[in-house]
Amino acid sequence: MSVEPNPIIRMPAELPKPPVKLQAGGRRVWDSVVVQFELATFELEMLGAACQSLDVAAKHKRKLDREGLAYKDKAGNPRPHPSCAEYRNSLDTYRKLLRELSLDVEPPASRPPGSPRGYR
Image 1 (spheres, rainbow, N blue to C red):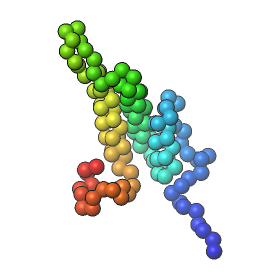
Image 2: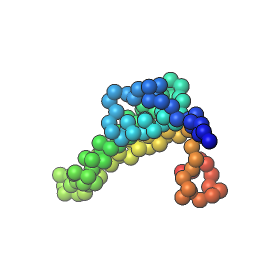
Image 3: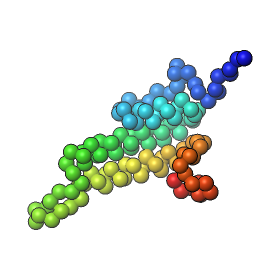
Image 4: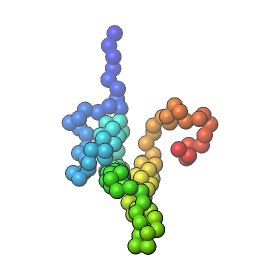
C-alpha cells in the first residue's frame, strides 16, 4: 500500500526566502505559513510585515518583562510604560495582517461551535 505525499507541504528548496531581519518568532511564523500555503508576491509582503510586527511585539514584551508595566513620573504618579502601547499596537497589526491574508485554516478545537468566523 503506497502513501501519496501531501500536496500542501512543499519541499524546502522551493520555499520563498524570509525577510532578512526576521527574528526567531517571526521566522517560525513565516516558515509555518509558507510550508502550508502558496502565496502571491503581495501576500508574501503582507506575511513579512506581519512577522516583523510580531518581532516588534516580542521586543517590547522583553522590555516590559525587564522594566515592569508602569513607572513613576516626576510627581511620583504611576504611569503606564510606553512599551505597553507599542506591544499592543504591534500585536494588533500582526493579527490584522494575518486576517487579511485569509489563510484557509481550521479553527482551533477549543473554539465553541457556531461562533461567527470573524470573531476569534
